[in-house]
Image 1 (tube, rainbow, N blue to C red):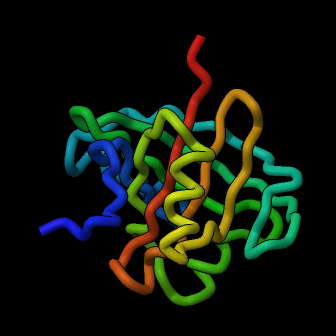
Image 2 (cartoon, one colour; image 1 turned 120 degrees about the horizontal axis):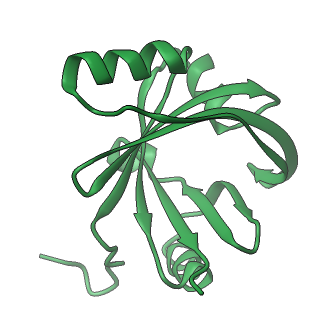
Amino acid sequence: MLDDAAIVLPPVRQIGLVVKDLQKTADFYYSTFGIGPFSIVPEVRFDGVIFRGQPADCSIKVGFADSGPIQLELIQPLRGESIYTEFLRSGNEGLHHLGFEVDNFEGMLAKFKRRGIEPIFWHNMGFMAFAYLDTGRIGGVIAELLWHKRD
């Protein structure tokens, strides 16, 4: 039964994995599970991203492949401190977050804040925005809000 204050999200759009070697992982998922081929972006820079309340600069290598309606995202940190380097440093590799594509990014962030769930790592670039929410300690995995500007 849903709590009266439940935040109803759309279906999961993305499963995000943080990995040490993106190419090796992409090759494994393609050869073993038939997911792929991955579209790989060699470097994405996040200048001025907010990480645990402070501005930070970092970059990642990222790969995307669809498996039905779900996008599998592989993330390999390259430079700077981020939620991804923190994850690897804690001894984890693999499942990091579930991504939900939302229509009202700011409104959804406000709903989570009212429930005491703050963003850990977020950035709004105007044409797209993302926010990783501090849900891992409660639900075992981080929730990510994704928003893309539609014309």
